[in-house]
Image (cartoon, rainbow, N blue to C red):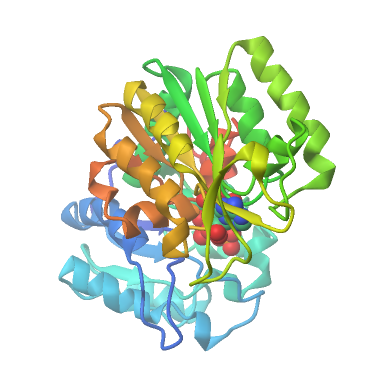
Length: 394
Ligand SMILES: Nc1ncnc2c1ncn2[C@@H]1O[C@H](COP(=O)(O)OP(=O)(O)O)[C@@H](O)[C@H]1O
Ligand SMILES: O=C(OP(=O)(O)O)[C@H](O)COP(=O)(O)O
């Protein structure tokens, strides 16, 4: 990465504004159900604490639409962070204004303060210059460690960098460098596995990856639009009618570029997407008209696993089936297991695939699991992320 990082600044005694992505899932009682994103930010926070910086953290939580709403308060996150750090985390009442400026002025070197949800102001998402300047007033240096929000050009992720020296945190650096290396200089064979619900969400990724990968494995709901474009009857499976032609042209482009595309050969079909329904496996040429394809079948799982095991670089984004229902999680499980067992560099895009890998217990066996869903997709599309673009060059 040709951007400055936290290590390029003298932070001793300085006020450092760190944009983190603490947008964590919570249950109805406000309990954090997955603290991965908080733990992922610890290296940067601990580094700054150890170097006696005054650490001021900013994040959003959910989508409160520019208004204060206690449901989206970051207070539970401050408590969890405090447990993880083993030190007090001051919870600020707000993210800008006189009170926060005073609280920041009272901080001692090594103190940590978490600002309240930046999305309580509509100016955040509007990337309002005045709001960014108010955030900047709190600090001497800006560090962006919020990879999960790096695809958003908001005041706290982009605008603020106009007013302060700006660099990347350790998480941001790791995400960009690990995925960047895989895309630009992969050990081959390089295989990408794409799944999830919609082709439309993955078009940009497919287009970018077709110029880079040796194998493209397609599963999940999106596979059915491709199967339809090849003339198969797909019953009541997920279909994006308006993307059938595009699917055909992507397959043609892959053929021209010499990329081997693997689509499902057999699928699990069920009458409904529901826990406890009956299901069976059929070849893709025999999908009954009244059934829905919900997972890749055993033959496909074995073929996918075979490619994954001989690959040297594997990137995965999107589940192979409706993995939320245990009976339809076998394809996703097979991909996760094959990746865990392969000696390849294994990268899991964020979102549902990351959740599936965690849930299925394979997290520790992967080279890298991204903390960003949308952000990792945009990165895989080859787009420059605004939250990275604004940082100072080395
Ligand atoms: N065959 C299928 N039919 C319907 N939905 C599917 C199918 N396969 C996967 N899905 C659904 O796709 C969703 C994930 O899609 P998506 O959001 O695109 O993935 P990601 O978050 O990994 O990018 C999951 O909720 C999963 O149940
Ligand atoms: O959780 C996030 O995105 P993700 O679910 O795509 O990983 C980020 O915190 C960005 O949130 P946003 O999509 O409300 O801008």
